[in-house]
Length: 426
Image (cartoon, rainbow, N blue to C red; front, side, top):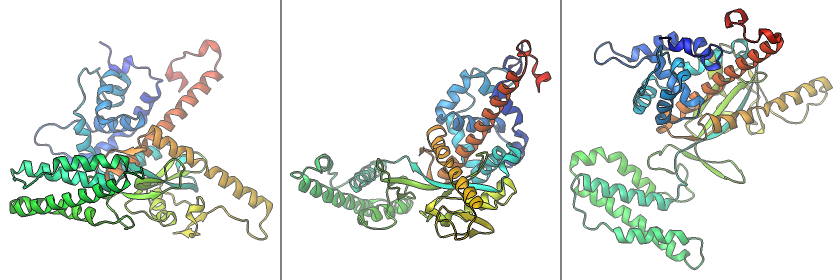
C-alpha cells in the first residue's frame, strides 16, 4: 500500500513547508519537558504541527483535531506516514503542551519562522507598531461583575454545604432586569437603585461566607475574596480597575476609534522588516505603557531572533519622544530638518509610506491568525497567542512565496514541460 508521502502532491506548499521546518530543533528543545518513565508522550512534531495549523488556518483546539482527521496534507505535515482515522490527541492536550513549553518554547517557534526567510529577516530597518489584543470578556459593567460575585458566592455555599441566611434570588433578578432600561429617563432612578442594591447583596453574601466557611476553605478563597472587595470598592474614575473576574490582569485602552472607543485586553507590539514584511518581534505588555516605552523590549526580541540589531526603526507619531534606543535610531514622521537635501527628504517620505504596510499586516493577524480575541488564560496566554500568530504569518508568507516561485517557474517553461518531475525542476 502506498504511504501518505507517496499519495500527497510533492508540490503542495504545506508539504514543502513541512520539509523545510527543522523539526529536530523542536524535539531537542522540548525533550527536556518529558520523562522516559510512564505513558509514552505524543510526538513533538505532532503537537507543534497542530499548534501551527491551529493558528495558520484560524481553528480552535477542538476544530483543528477534527479537521486533522479529514485532511491528509495536515497529517503529512505533522509527520504521519499512513493516513489516520482517529483523533491525533484530545483537544486539552494542546492546552497542556502550550503550558509546558511556555514563552521560551513559543519564542523558539517564532525564531524558526523568521529564520526560514534567510536574509529577508535580517534587514537593517524595521517597522514597529502597536495594537490591542482583546480578551474574551464582555463589556465590563460594574453591575455585571456584582452579579457574577453573587453567583460565585451561591456556588461556593452549595459546594461546601453552607446554609445562607438569605439568597436574594428574586431581588437579584429584579435588579438585573431594571438595568435593561437604564438609558430611559423615567427608569434611570430605578436602575441606579438596583445597581446599588446588587453591590450591597454581593457584600452581604461575601461576609456571610467568610464567617461560616471552614478555615481551610476560607484560606483557599482568600485571593478571590480580596478580588471581590476590590471590585465592590472601586469607583468609575479609579485607576487599575478590575474589568473581569476571570481575567483580572486586563486593562482598558482608549483607541479613539469611531466604532469602538475602548478595548479591553493587553497592548501588543509587532516589528517587521521594512522591505519584505517578515515579522521579527511580537511582544505583549503586561501594563498599558506609552508606545515609545515599549520599544526597548521589542527591539531586544528582534535582535535575539535574527542575531542582527536594527539600525533604524520606523514608527508613527504615537512614538514621539525617543530618538535612539540602545543604538537604534527611531524615525518618527515630522517636519523636515532645516537644510535637509531633497534626496534625503524623498528617502524619508518613502520610508514613512512603507511604514503604513504594517497596518494591513496587523489586520491579517487579527482576522486570519486569531489575534482578534484571545481565548487563552491569563497574561501568559496573551504572550503565547501573539507569538504563535506572528509565527503563523511568517509560515504562511513562506508558503505564498513558494507558490509564487512555482508559478513563475511553470510560466517560464514550454507548454510540453509543465509536468516535469519535481526533481528536475528543483
